[in-house]
Length: 203
Image (cartoon, rainbow, N blue to C red; front, side):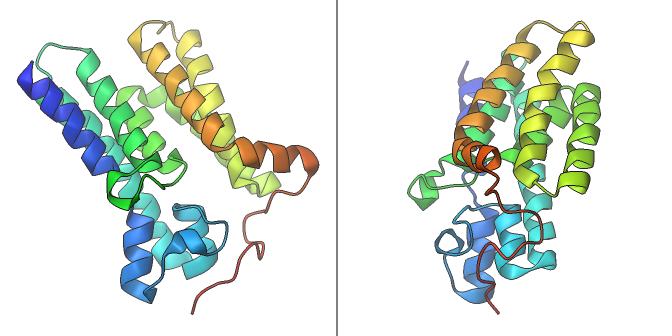
């Protein structure tokens, strides 16, 4: 049991590396959580720092979700639940990072990496719909919420109703909790759209 426990702890520590915070600090000497929407994620990085840094943050956050799942597979032995817990631990780390006083992002990019690694096709189908919603509405938060909502449904449709489904439902709860203020803004019609001037860009 030692290696599985180490895998979960390491996945949390990996998830706690907030690339948005690190990149903003290294490039502009700022704490990105004090600019734009205040969120340490790719969307706010786009708003504050521009496209290049945002793409880098998105890719790195996705990769750490993928890495966490594979760490669980390598060190988990025959325990099926270890990759699932490692994926969850990476998301928890991103949302509540130990290195940054537990003030992190909303975990969607890391969630994409985790879900794509655990159940690729349900996540792919949900991702296509989520991307289309962002293209047509320009609400990233709406697309994110659709992604975590639809993935469990596609898992059910594909007949996967075991540990993977429970994991996707826990991720769903995480995402909706972290997006609770966005949900209120969406209902009120006050949510910032992709590309809108929702915060001051640092140059």
